[in-house]
Image 1: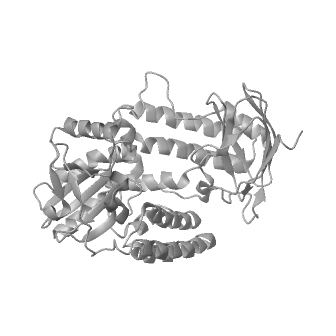
Image 2 (image 1 turned 60 degrees about the horizontal axis):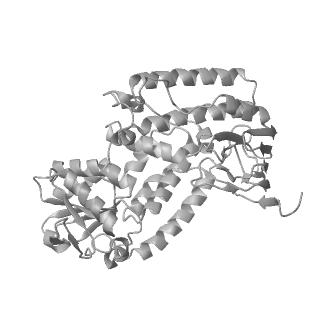
Length: 454
């Protein structure tokens, strides 16, 4: 084998944390060899990773450093995928011949089990996704898989982890119902569809090694709020979330990730309140170390947003209706203003629109103005925006505008708008209440508005 054909890739981590059987163990390398005998690129990456990591024809050696169980995903040139499972110190040899993947190594029997017992939550026809029949089918399917795991003779650590993995796959699918139905996928969820969330708790630190564990838990908490199963608080919601997490380590890591997520979304004037609320609840050593780093990040972010703090005057801007009528923010003085910045190619933005319309309808007889401000530019996108506005037919109290220059305008630069959806809340005097407000689907935004009305 020539050096040109052998590539060494060192990867550190992902969300791969200590689990049963490895408590207190030091992080170790996993030695993964991929022999790609095809002429096509294939892909291998941790399941929680977005995007794809290419594995070119030839032999590639990967040595990720992990301190617990990790799931990887191999995708071939025909978009067929394979789930793979490794733990610290494992070896995994993969051979792809252009048609199928084969494997050997420490956990070869585990890889075979994953290949033979795949689970993606799909039910046979004519069962419609998100129907009660779909829920019952998947609950029975999971029961069968749990039984197979118990009788498999596979390592106890894998059996325990994979049961949580399967449970989270199904939970994630259930939580996606609202968004998928909005785009015409699946049956209408029944009235009691979300009742399972009434008593849902998270009580095992095994969850920490699951792909996308944090996003699934966060989505579950937010859906509980929407359904009225959790008390809604505009600023003190993290301790409320924490009550649904009975494992100390998991609770600590989740709360720290919530703080990290808050900073990823942007700046928050209430960040110090969040930290004060959760500090007594964080007991895990690593989580405490992460908290100290996050607090430093907050200070840096505060400096970057020093002109957008609560109480400061909101920068004025001029935007236009589809007919060319101009409106300025200063025209709205005397009213609380809720501004949703978005563009037509943003799927999350479009998913939020029905919530924005409903919120505007709720406050239509009160001194609140809702502005939907498109950042679209160019003939094609502008035509699509105008079409979308026309299709709404003026039925909503939302004022639909377009900001010239979009993301490249001086205004978006001043507001640090680099991603959307971005919601900004302005008081009746034209001063910033929240430059990074919650999304319309989040009941905390409604609560914030109601407070401003008093």
